[in-house]
Amino acid sequence: MDKDLEEWYKLHKFHFYSGSYKTKDLANYLGISPRTIQRWIKAKTRPTKEQLAQIKGYLIQEETKDSL
Image 1 (cartoon, rainbow, N blue to C red):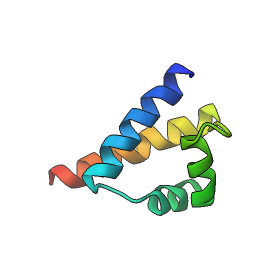
Image 2: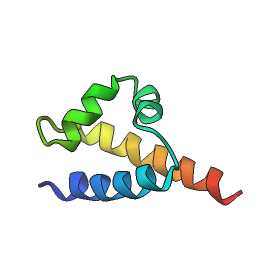
Image 3: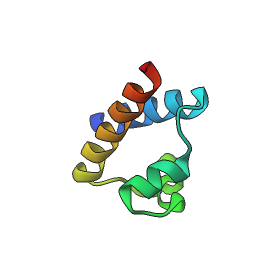
């Protein structure tokens, strides 16, 4: 697994299971379907480098909201 993808997966699991966001929220932010994210999680497809960068931005944004 690609280092960036592995990092995203770990962050996704942490934030998802802590209740910080839902898959559909991330999908809406990225302009993709929740099904696409499910495929990433199951390693059927992979996000692009651009999508990984957007995901990191989204998670940072969510962390900022949680800390307020």
